[in-house]
Length: 159
Image 1 (cartoon, helix red, strand yellow):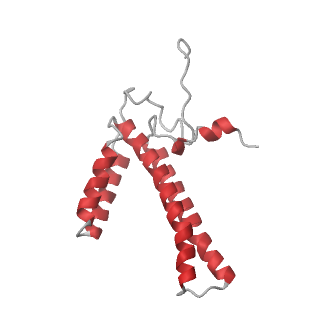
Image 2: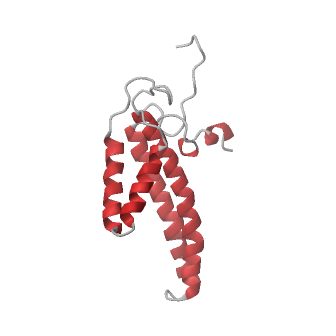
Image 3: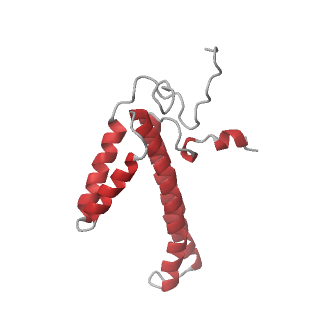
């Protein structure tokens, strides 16, 4: 049986705290792989298993029924990890709105350019060095000290 406290402390379920570069990178890979597997591979396996016609409307509806909720759910988790990464840099998580705004402005006429700009911004955020000291968003977790779970705050007076 899974320990509910540890499951609740998974880093992708909160926007509070900080996340260093390597955990952010690993969470990004894990979330992308899970989203791809659940949102795209699973419905395709069902379509093949049910022997549905690839061009039929039922196939498109089935793909949409799986893909849309999975994409929305995993986007929320991705935003949570991005906000934690911004906190680690020392920037408020509200800056994510600026990234979305820039993407939406550029994507209106030039979708490819918007995706490139957001990819470059994401790369800069991933490679930007962490705040070396504690900041208003949390304590400075030692390098790779908390990959999958939020670090528990230490009681006052204990090392």
